[in-house]
Length: 186
Image 1 (tube, helix red, strand yellow):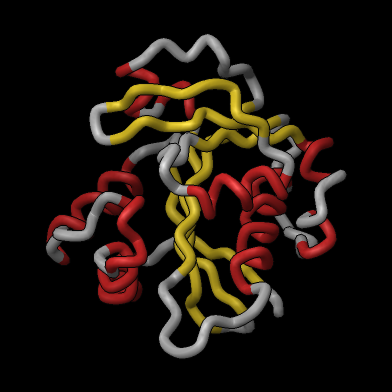
Image 2: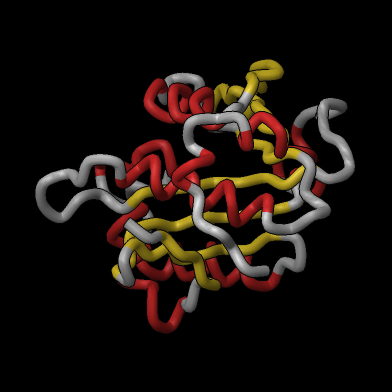
């Protein structure tokens, strides 16, 4: 499997992204009841931000995932809670693997996650990737640990209790997922 990322194109990708973020398997994305217009507004707002980017991911050429990268010091969470844990060189990341259209494909999620991490670390200025998944999301917690993330602490946010977690470049390089990561041109 080969995974790639490209900038999200709202004109082309809105119907697909709306279907993904409103699917019951995407409950942790917190957009289950969002209309197409609300999804468009959310991603149009991201496109206007110089410190937040949305990416469409493909596996073997087919749309398969959505990723976001952002400056965690400028994120909405940074305005809600004290984040002394953040450092220069941190990059925030969110990833959503598309709900399967048929039978699940073995290894798909790990391939996607490795590609997103490789994309993040392709920028030499990035020293750590920062995530804040819902503490109830055991599947992503296990995947984060496999990729080399360490939980720093829990954060009480308006819509969830999050596990503020970081992964250093070195921890990812030593992780089992690193071998799945593609070379990512920057």
